[in-house]
Length: 203
Ligand SMILES: [Ca+2]
Ligand SMILES: [Ca+2]
Image (cartoon, rainbow, N blue to C red; front, side, top):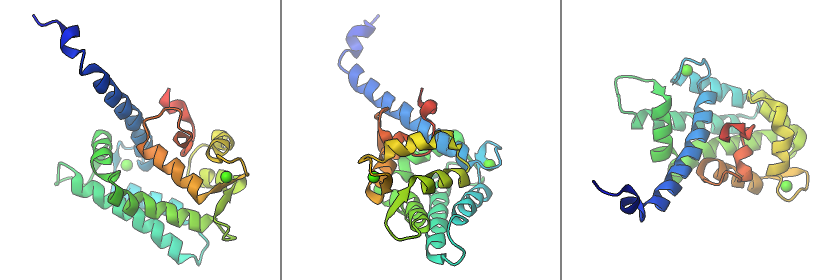
């Protein structure tokens, strides 16, 4: 019988680093899935994505078609990435495990990420930045959370963490850094983990 400690002594550190990374990202992607599954039936469908898209686009001013279009386009691109990568082509429903798999394999690839998440964020920041300053104030940030259906209880704490230079505004760079950390970082202490709200999902 092989000695398991001897057999795994070389592989173990790499393996455990990878699984930590996967666990943390899985939890974040699972949170995104639960958010996307607007009717709570355990699947993400086109109807859910359209609801998400609507929820985001009402944050834009009535006549701000450019930013509404960017957000809608981002959600549609995200949905198409999910559809194209799904295993069962006869069904237009994505269950959680498949969603997580496709997030890892497809959505976070740089080009795809830009087409899906990048478009949404461009539109969102453009829509909220009414004075064209390129930044979000705490009021705008907390208001955004509420409108997007994310519990506002921790959003001022989140704001403090994402406002890295402490100037009371979240800049486009600070938002991008948070976005990058949220989707791509394995660091459980990364401030960007707060992007969508409470971090107790990571504990
Ligand atoms: Ca659903
Ligand atoms: Ca700042």
